Amino acid sequence: MSRKPNDDLVRRLKSIEGHVRGVQRMVDEGEYCIHVVNQISAIQSALKKVSAIMLDGHLRSCVTEAVRSADAETREEVLGELMQVFESSTQV
Amino acid sequence: MSRKPNDDLVRRLKSIEGHVRGVQRMVDEGEYCIHVVNQISAIQSALKKVSAIMLDGHLRSCVTEAVRSADAETREEVLGELMQVFESSTQV
Amino acid sequence: MSRKPNDDLVRRLKSIEGHVRGVQRMVDEGEYCIHVVNQISAIQSALKKVSAIMLDGHLRSCVTEAVRSADAETREEVLGELMQVFESSTQV
Amino acid sequence: MSRKPNDDLVRRLKSIEGHVRGVQRMVDEGEYCIHVVNQISAIQSALKKVSAIMLDGHLRSCVTEAVRSADAETREEVLGELMQVFESSTQV
Image 1: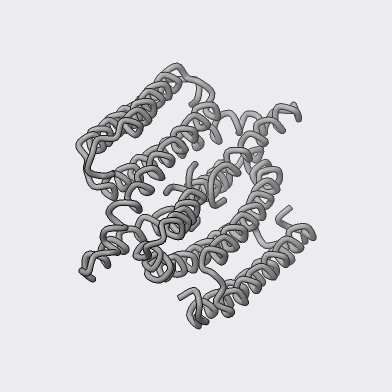
Image 2 (image 1 turned 135 degrees about the vertical axis):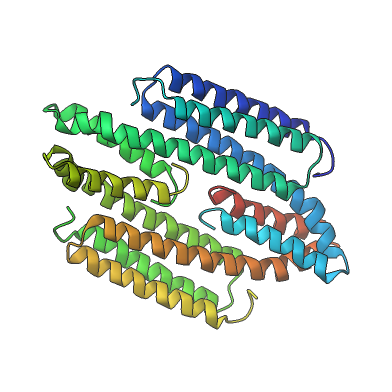
């Protein structure tokens, strides 16, 4: 997946971009803090969804290829990267 | 703070908006998944910082006023909102 | 709240302790990884709930007192602590 | 890894169990809320580390086997489980 354009992801990211602009406007117009913070949470959830879609594609393409390949070094590298993503996430 | 424009926050949000556009380009050009996911993590951190700044201002203005006010209902509402923000966050 | 024993919290923590012991047993008996990881997530949620209850009490006691007090330094310290808790949490 | 006892993990979980008992004592003795909340954060980090170790073993055993196997259904199931763990974590 990581090697070809992905319309769904780009569409999601465009919508996130618009959402961020909306939050700028809210801040600029002095909207109530808690409303702004809630909109930021919504943006974070939308970004998390994009990461999840990316990772799903990654598991099914690069990780699958690397795990099947005979090259232990590549395999190690790809699994190591995946663990770093896990560890930099929160609860896992 | 929530009642007046805030240049620093708007500047941070504009930078986040640019960062989201950069991620769109990365996806569009078929960049390696893990690099995209790492950029999304960086955006998440930047958004978290904006929320933290908003909440800091909120504590020092609205929450402080509400807690000092004689009106128990307003106080309850403001503290309840704050707890909801805490609870919807992850680790707290 | 922080100054007196709290039965509900102790009960929750005892249940969490039992849950952690259950996970030890699962690991010891070679249970399937994903099941173990899911139980750890459940413990994380239970711990988060304990923190939320603690913070709710904290807002209504120490923070309320500090904000009402005339002493700016105490006020600053208590609000600063609260922000640190926010910032060390994930999404906020 | 998921099929044999794992001393390091059990040791970590025993230490977490002791830590949870320590927090019970803190709550029982009316320790300052913020100190308790900080100890709970430390426990959450320790649990996250246990999950990360479990997942690392899982990637190198079950996931690797499943991905190499000819059975598409098993493969799909194992990758689906992995994605669920990702998605239930916070930042992905």
